Amino acid sequence: MKLRAALVTAVLIAPLAITGTAAHADPNNNSVRKLVKAVNGKNVKRHLKVLDLIAKANGNTRVDGTRGYELSRDYVAGLLRLAGYKVSTQKFTFENLEFKTKPVFERRSPSPQVFALGLDWTPSGHTAEGTFSGKVQAVDVMIPPGPAPNSSTSGCEAADFAGFTPGNFALIQRGTCGFSVKVANAKAAGASGVVLFNEGQEGRTEADVNPDLGGPSDLPVLFASYWTGRDLAATPGAEVGFTFSWETVTKSYTTYNVLAETRHGRDDNVVMVGGHLDSVEDGPGINDNGSGVGAILEVALQMAKSRPENKVRFAFWGGEEFGLLGAEHYVANLTEQERANIALYLNFDMVASPNYVYHVYDGDDSDGVGAGPGPEGSAQIEKYFEEFYASRGLASKGTDFDGRSDYGPFIAVGIPAGGLFTGRRSARRPRRSPSGAARRASATTAATTRRATTSGTSTTPRSTSTPTRSPRSWAPTPSTPRRSTARTPPAWGSGPSSSTRRLPRRADDGPAQRPSGALRLHSMPCRVNCEFWGHVRLTAPTRAPGS
Image: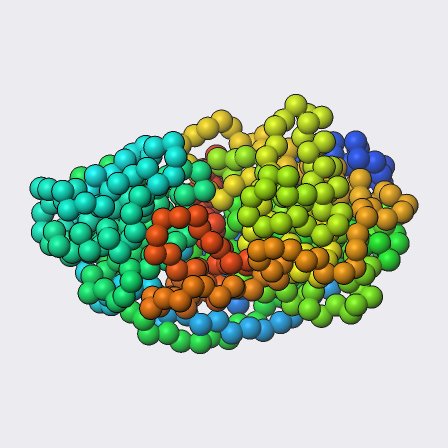
């Protein structure tokens, strides 16, 4: 298996490495216009094919601590060295508290499917332990959902369970009443388990809530994404299985950041461009975040022969899926002067969502949603991106600095930040060909990077002091949740796809209160990621018997 993986990777990397050297970079890519023209989705897609095949040859993953991650690291570092960058790898170790036995929620019939932990569902902090099964029965659900949050009354009244078959799993939609009320009504109706699912409006689709039931339950209770709930509701008589144990184990991991720096430019006004290199355990991570890696890598290769006035440092982070650990490690080990030398940080995490929106991080808090504004200079970064999209006749939309990606540690120490994000997952229906989204996201990456690097003075006004903000700290660490008897699952899985970040417990259906740096739940397995690439499903060559 190791031999096959090495051979497959070598075969793929060799031709790309050749194009990544002198033949790939044009010394005339010394302006925004030229660099944007040089960076294109076709070349980015080639990098994604390599990352996908690396994963396929190594257990279908590129998560930290695996051969798949090491080969991803070597691929990126190798291309950048050949292109002439000063490349280094930063090694670090960490421990992760994980379930000893991976929790499983699956549809057994019809169309058997194992739902992805953390993406499709999460266990309640009050759930019962054990192995359970039963048929799913929807309880007064509203699909599609009403236009306003908290409009579904699913499971809020005993009358909702009229005709409910005892022994079935109750499928209940988030809505007007508390989770504890819904579960109590389901239990009274004879349910053998409860699948709560998100309501479905914007911002209420993910499996990102830990339902607080007010105390331990003797029923298995889990929270699913809107899409999972919708699928189950559309499959009458579907039989599901649920296996869960609270037993945990602590595991140690070693991983790496990859850093590549131009050999020219001011070193007291460094432009940093980054995205995480690791995937989750359950997939190759093509959108999350092969897309960001591919876009950044292609920009770096295309500008390799230019001489920027400000030094550019490209970063490919490890440990992001465990809680931004690579970026945190990097920032924590900078001296005060080294931090002061970083003019800004641009983050590219998931820039090729199949159901994309042109999201720009809201540096000035003009949207008034969630976290406050970024450090001084973040507003200018947002404006640059907005101007680029506007120049192409494309509408962009702000997205909150919610602490769920690698900009968090930089913001925590007062470094201006910004970047792009096109969405976490597909709505499981085609919208329009998203190939243009990747192309434009890559072009925007190039434009903003080049614009920042060609300024002879400070790229954005900034303060070296840590900003004060309310209501949450910029630091990507969990906030203290309100008092509750609910247990917080230590990790959403038994392997390295899990984060030590915690979801806050929710007893009611009010606005979600995610702590800064909360558990990332927007990692997509390849069955979703690959929709973007025209259902690309590269398979590593198999060995002949005896080879």
